[in-house]
Length: 206
Image 1 (cartoon, helix red, strand yellow):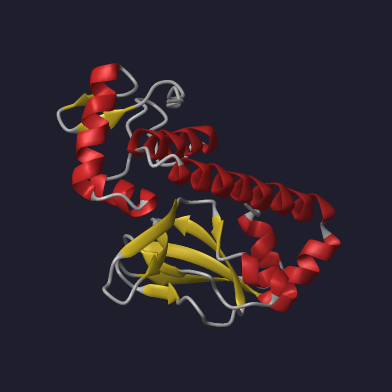
Image 2: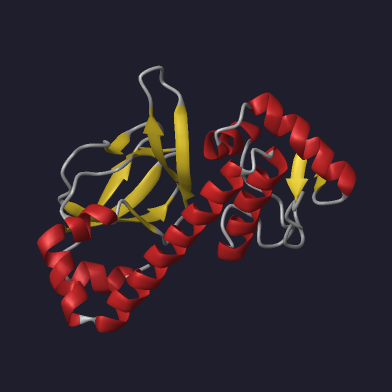
């Protein structure tokens, strides 16, 4: 999201995190801007029974946990390293000054946050339809549009069925069954257990 050399010039520092390590917890105050350099990070809510609701699988180059930087509230979700990762972080007051001094970066952040909000509206709309195909199609279309969680060369989806279930609120059995149906309809391709999506999925309208 922000050039690493620029972050370093403003005093940012690297931090290594191991698989399963919590970077910050839901409800905690925010002290840093976070950006992923290598690895993967889950941005997730975890209920009292330990069930995950995944909001995003963060990929290298992306920021995460941004909302408290602007509204001074606590983190709305927990960030967990999904694999050994390297992050770069910058103290919140310095980050805000960086934003003020670089209007182009500030505008880019506004665009990014607006896209995320628009996606949340699409998700809520798909939930109201009570249609698993619509919910999965909404998710995959969003990921395709952002060029996230897909292999750039072969268009393989780099998410497990369980992760898709955690991102849509569906049971994993429902995800498996629904994606098999979508494969039979030609909305996506499943080969040797791998999921491929070359084009944007036709959304369900019924």
